[in-house]
Amino acid sequence: MDTEKLTLVRNKINIKRMKSLNYIAFIKFLAMIIIIKWHLFFWKKKPIDYGARMCELLFVASGFLVGYNHYKRNMPCDYETSFNYSYKHLRSFYPLELINIIFGYYINKGKKYDLTEFSILISNLLMLKSWSRHAILIASFNGITWFLTDLLFCYFLAPVLLQGIKNIKNSVILFFIVSFIRVTTEEAISHGAFNLFDAEFHRGPIIRLLEFYMGMLLTPMFFYFKHYMDEYKNKFLVKIIFTFIQIVLPIFIYFIMLKFNHQLLRCYFVLIFSFFIFIISYDYGILSDLFAHKLCVKIMSCQMEMFLFQKAINNIFRFPTIKKNFISMFNNKQTQFLIKLFMIFICGYFYKILFKEKFAKLLDIIFFKKISQ
Image 1 (tube, rainbow, N blue to C red):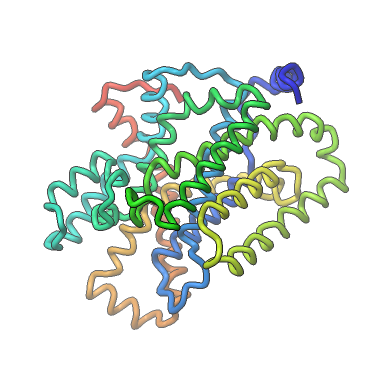
Image 2 (image 1 turned 90 degrees about the vertical axis):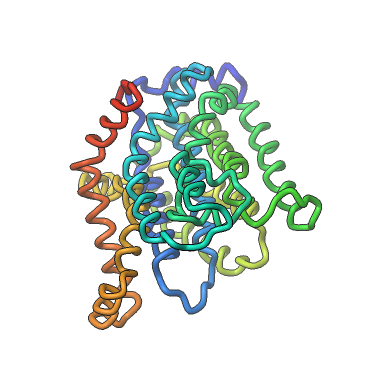
């Protein structure tokens, strides 16, 4: 695992666009659906903190995918690159997020906040509210904005973070260092060692950056082993083994979450998800071939749009007349959720194919940006 071997591995990676990791795409899509259900479904009792678990999974997976996609390419480490890279992601979701914020402001207008409504509106528009310690600010208008703010912060620092995956030895050392920081910080806070943070610590950009970077630091090790495993990937036995892993491992992790939900701190679940993402990133199973189907790819491609539409759709169903008629027609809670989920998917899918790029280009005009696709 020395530097020369790692360089050899990197030189043999195709310079063309990296192959999509279909099973991870499915896991991310599933995680988004679970988060949507966490927010929209009426729970009598919540057996697992699904919202927290899936956010941890998504930040680790997002970091891994950024490392995976940029491992073979050099990215300049400067402010201009950071701004361009983060803006490239911002343009894809900000127009829809802007609609969500304005709609949320209209729905919640008249509520009494500790801060003025205008101040909260500005913090939402500028994607700054997850830096606040005020829970009421972070949850205002569109409660999911904190996720986007944290993710955008990770993307802004991606050019700097990518410097840590150039050397496999350094990446392994950094992974253990970052993991140690993530664990000890939360352990210290849980034991009252710090009073600097409050409950919103877990929605803050710094803690999510650590999770994002943990995922990114896994990529050199992934490519090192992939170099030796690729020659066996089409063998029937290998496909069966990895298919078994793709089926059994998520079930096993679900039972870990169920059993240790109130016993383990979030940081330990982050470590579990890091292991999970690393294992399933080897896309050799039959399920990977299934999710590579064009129809599956199209369905899963609108996961971020679904995430963004969830609050708006749920707000519509909160209008008294609509709520009353909806409940009278569909009394079953599961049915109500499935109908909402279907509407969220339809809105997300058609927004993606019809409006997403048009609104993104409009944003480019406003900011005088020309982004290479």
